[in-house]
Image (cartoon, rainbow over all chains, first blue to last red; front, top):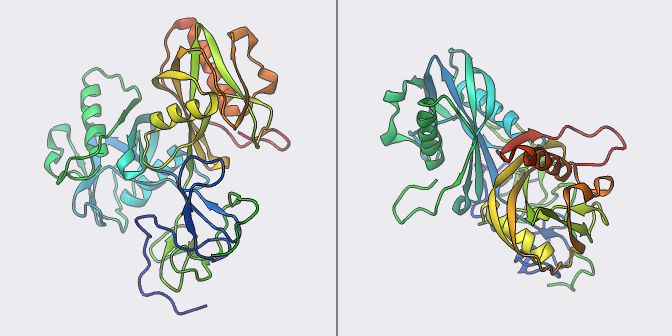
Length: 199
Length: 199
């Protein structure tokens, strides 16, 4: 074992150089019978598939007001977001959305139905947002949140929201409020034009 | 570079032993500020997150008959399935469902709306099935398919289907046929009891 690294990081882009199974250098190739290039170990034979990740979150509502969190982390530091994060192994999308809401806002919610399912292919992600009912308005923001606050529909800080999946989920919600009918919405976020903010 | 491995394989379970960035041995630990154990490199600082995978597929219909594929691969070799497979980087769930249908059945389809979204936490997966219209009934099964065939609703081989997500998607479809209304269905597959087949 070596000394602790001073800073931990998340390898990105996802380039892999060494085999996680045997430690030897990897080769970029199309494995036999496959259709896509993969990181392949020619020593032990391991094929290192990579797949899109799921982001799971909630739209928590207290007496008609929507809970948003001011991001304390990159990307999109200091912008308002719905509580959300990467889905973990062993949980459902709903369990993940519930967990992320507690981690980021420290709020007691009852999760409602799945509301938006959004393909974000350029980010290699699928986003899921659930409707949620706040049971107790007390907030205890976690380390990834500068501030958590409830916003009436006419107070939403549209000019400083975090991601397009958050913006479009809020847009759907305000539109559905008019009818009182909240079906699941599924759509894709197109690749952003240059200089536009990412999804 | 060493000699080609004789057999390529997909590391499973997902245990990682060496860092994909620097090749050194990994440590299992909770990184600073994190809530879950990860595979962490104490040499270069890389944190190797792992996340659930998405499986994307279609329910292709030709003149009221449903297209099923007889699996030529494990798991569930020689059982009937809807065409489906792992979502790839850079594609949407719909593009993946379309691609898998072509790869497994060699059939020309027009993809319809998203139909089922199914959490399968014990398999660390989320499954997505789309409705699809077959444009030309000609079939050209790929290497992962022993046979592809159309089944009328009363001919579905219930006793020899591949996965519970396929079974429940077909059940929803037959029920919705009675009303002609096909909303998105979202649900979870519970952990199977001992000896029952996996999701």
